[in-house]
Image 1: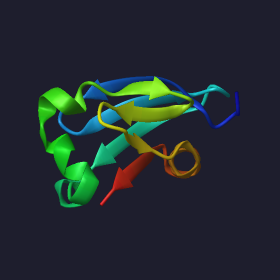
Image 2 (image 1 turned 120 degrees about the horizontal axis):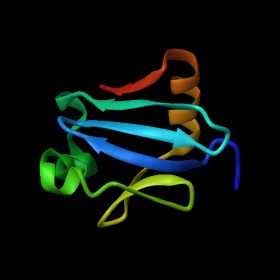
Image 3 (image 1 turned 45 degrees about the vertical axis):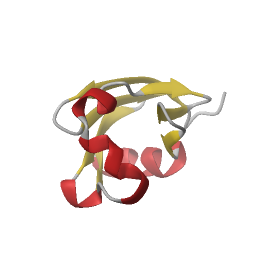
Image 4 (image 1 turned 180 degrees about the vertical axis):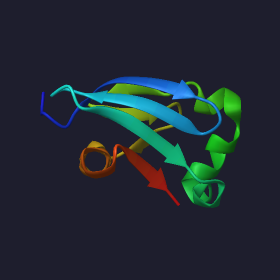
Length: 85
């Protein structure tokens, strides 16, 4: 396990995740509606959004949709949250 691996995720509607990393750092990931295009368009469905889980240290949703933990870690360490615009 790497220090920037996500170990816990909790969906909070609308479009926000609480995450915790292997080294104890925690924070929020917020999706702006303008970021929900392409592969992320499916996350407009609240039922799908709340199915977020951790797999191999990454936040993942059904259908092979995931977020890179390293970029998330860096932003949360600097700002307490990562806003995807």
